[in-house]
Image (cartoon, rainbow, N blue to C red):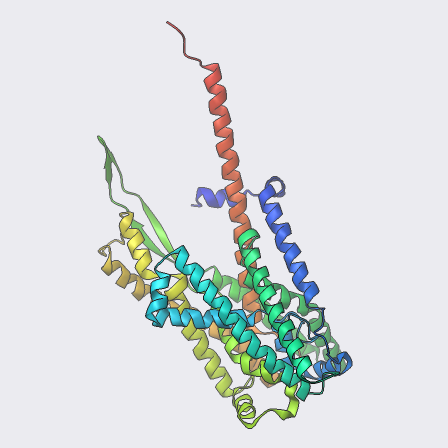
Length: 451
């Protein structure tokens, strides 16, 4: 039996969307900032030899260069001001969250509520500046080593670092503005739009190469694989484990109200796409610094790339380990804190049948979530690794990455849910206004008679 909220969500129409002015403004604001982001990917860093860069990226498009370009929305292939993308911010978030789970001062900040959260966000911004500066300097040096600069030297390195760090900080600001005043999660939407924008060009290149080799069976097989992965991701993202919650009888005055019941939904993958993004950010970090250096990479970096290159056994093993780790870590520290859920249930007089409120409920939720995450982390690892294995074994030129598919599906579903939530809120406001108007009218008609 569908709930009233679900029935109302099913009855939403374009007419209701047209009447929701605030939702329209939020969507237009989000689209406007995303257009600004896309325009910024075409503004080049000063001092780049565009012809040499285009030749280099054409040669690297079927390998790691295509992966990095897709994650930055094509800004890396054009060496735009957003070439670093939002990855420094994600890496800084990983570091701050890891320290927040292990370092006592940051643990205390997390307990301070909004004030502590603001301080942690500020530390994340500082970390973003530091990481972006190191990555920008490494990229400037790599560009010079690859003979992709018209006038190499100290002035170029300073200009490149200032431009790339400023572009990353501007992207971070865009993401925060979208989250606060737009619709959806701003950082996720920036990555989402970057991937979607690069899909048509990559798809055209894949079809063109397939036409040259006349291997249409492989092309159809890849498309079938992508559709199957999309359907599997949607199914798993909508899968829930419902825990029955019972509420006792309560007495108000002389009346006794029967206790109600509800369900506590726990997703199979409460962390969403965050573990895949975190793991990809860590794995792409050394490759980002060495992409433009060609054969001039140092012995240490060459060894790292040889063992941790895409498709290599150590790469796949480390990728799996990072996905599993971040799935458990992010779920327990951010997405689903069992101690807070148990305290909230206790404060609302709710309990799991057969389980005592408080500590016992927390232990039971830990038990359920731990075993549920075995399936969730395995699903994430499978989706992320299967395209990697097929790409390395079959030499597929177009990068059908599992992480990209996860981002597209998860961000798309989350944005649609937020739009539906705004529509539901607008419909509830309309119902309240109508009831108030009816109350006023009935009050006018039924005026009390004078005696």
